[in-house]
Image (cartoon, rainbow, N blue to C red; front, top):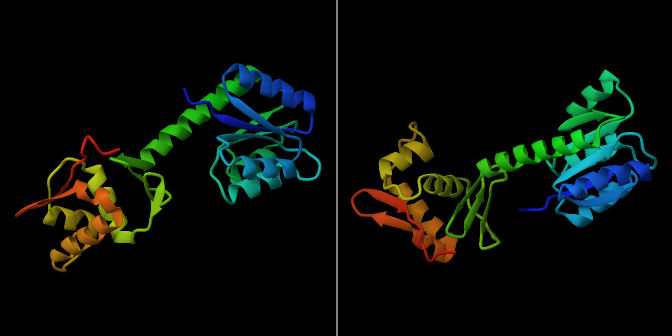
Length: 229
């Protein structure tokens, strides 16, 4: 089981300890910070935080500002904790992209349950935007292609073509079908443009490019060799 890392941010040490103890009991890794500025330092230093639990009222930098700065660079789930139950605060939280808003006092068990629910949703959503085949990993939302941990630069159409091949892995695709799906039905150019793009894509994928098989007289197929890692 993957151990998710949670950043707990609160200026009250007793509150941090209470929340952290319950999270650790539920097999989460926990790192702590006592104000917004320290939270940002920890967040960027750790670089693998899966969820942030963020108090609103803190010295040096409050939770709202910390939330804004995290949101500027990351979609990591954020739970805001506050002693206030003001509707305006809650609305501000959601405008800033907060995933959950919990008013103090709260049940630590309920907080842990909400952490679990948010992480399950996040993992599911992430899985839907990522494709993997034979050592190639495509993140559709971030428009990134990785091969064995190394990023590969593709043009927009090369990226779209690779996504189409990966989503139809093992299926023989005619040039006409590829053209209609990747270039859309309003494209009136020569179907040979596909051959040109496939050639460039194979080259950029290196040895992984061999997984794109030519089907003579028809088109192409992405076929993962079982020996590919």
